[in-house]
Image (cartoon, rainbow, N blue to C red; front, side):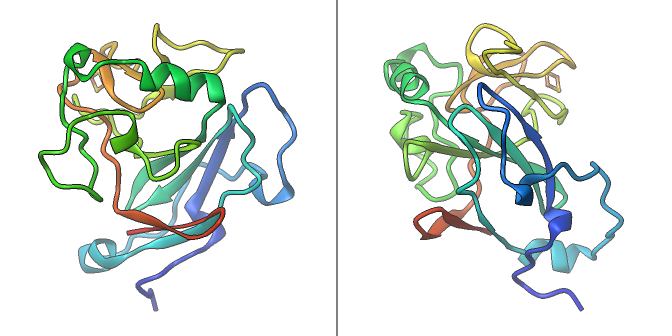
Length: 187
Ligand code: FES
């Protein structure tokens, strides 16, 4: 029976490697297939916990949460500095879209995360729902260093904020918290 807090290896999907190729054994790639078909009631209440310590700066790991990809990206100091330097006035979507903050919170970089090193967003493009591709130094995607949605060309920065449409909104930040130095609970 499904429980409110589900932490299974099925939640883990794949790693997009950045500059560092080695990742812990816990992050061995798993197929992008989920055999589960939980009821909507289970999906609505489901949460997941994960220890993200093995993710290296510049890497992203994709988990699955409530049927959607969940991007957990560890940012480098350079990426954090770049994201923090962007004025909200330059953004397409000025709202943080952070479930942990009031709806009116502005989309500053600080309002997009709990710890600057970690950006955690739902990996669903806000245009028509495709899964954006992460940008790495080895495989740059778009102009903003974050993610590129290949469906219609939307681009997101390293805070998951939309910088080039047609996507109208920033990638959603889910409800989450740190329950340990590198352990998160989402949902
Ligand atoms: S679904 Fe991403 S740009 Fe259209």
